[in-house]
Length: 460
Image (tube, rainbow, N blue to C red):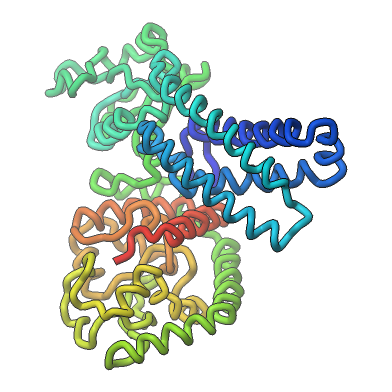
């Protein structure tokens, strides 16, 4: 795992993305060399050919990402990869055509682009086949041992077993012989905690993950010696966060919030978020004003009632504020407590469309300008729902530590919430965001939000 923007990414996926970036650049360069023949050097060096290749490569990789070609579930399906690759290349051609019209200086010959994408398609087939086989070579995986058992360790094991791209192989666990569980699925008990040093050598283990439930029986001196010799020694909660980008709320101890490395929100970070919110919301209000006027007119003509929907939401420190949205439901629908559903009968004709396009959220730019919200943060809910969840879910009030956001880590990871379990999982993502709050993480969330908006995912 490699940490970027305070979030961990599977190193194998990052390696795949890097190799395919090189592959696309090489394919376009080879295509230019063949297409132009003896004039290739002149075109590439003196006529911005390499700059054009760099631009085309970046756009192609971005389109591949936006078409989920680096999604672990898609990578395993060869047919799905081929279909999405064709879609990504088609999108690349459209974007490049528009870009070349606006900026002729970075234009590549049309034949070079098409020929280069054909070569890229051939190379992509080979790279993906090799990646799937590489994932299947378990002897290249990082061998990991669990020290002690517990709910978080069990959750971690389930995640690792379902995600081979992580490159982690759990060889077994150490626990007292008097413990009730001797086997958990295919995972076996290797021995006593005191034998950790010998077993690390015997099993060729490079990572030891210990459970907080076994803290009283941890062989501290042995673990310190292993750590000094290069073995990674990691708490199960930290390991779970790095794998999932989520805090394990259902198995979390309250002391974790106190002793975690995160949750130190400096005034500097809050200041940059506020400055970014003010500048971004002002620019957004100016640029979206014509579109907002059209949406307001459509809402007014479509059904009787106010154009703007107002509702109380819970914000920072549990304080209430009024959120503003374009009305997308019939008047009186707010008395129905049911969460919005697909093809909900309460939607107006225009309301269903603007919700799919997320245009109903545009008036929240005013909330951001006022300081009720930020662009990125936990999503605010109505007071009744917040009070119920705060009384039901431990540490739920922790998400009130920062201003709520128009988008957030939970929104891009979990999507729409309809059940109590959904909200528990979403809280895990919210706490992870607060723990790792940074400018880089905010940019990552906004980048992925654009993908969700363009693909129309998660709207109801």
